[in-house]
Image 1 (cartoon, rainbow, N blue to C red):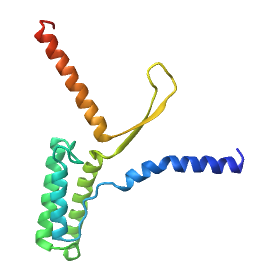
Image 2: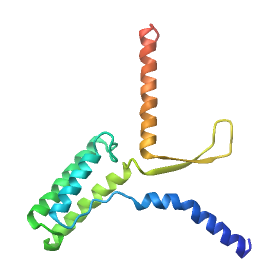
Image 3: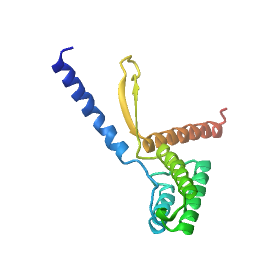
Length: 160
């Protein structure tokens, strides 16, 4: 391939990745430098884990972990007030707590864009399809509800 075609191919590839980069830029981040900022951030995260929030799909055990880590970080800020006043072991604990919470929130972020190559029914040619994590979870819940309702109707009619 000549230089001109390589340049055009690189440009097209770069432009096709722009939407993905824009989504990655808005990753959830639990990070604060002082007690007041952290308290507001922790409240916001807990609200966003409720139904309809950005992190509504955080599972039960993960929710327990997030709450425990937020409480641990809150205790550190109660003791030291700011990150600058923390000793090295406290800073390390704060960092590890933040990383664990951020990993869970990133994994369950309803705004996260998920793309995959799928061959439509009746074709071998794959197409790239993208949806947010929330859209995927809602489709899955709708499908499970439909199957459950179908089974219930069949049982009520005397079927198996």
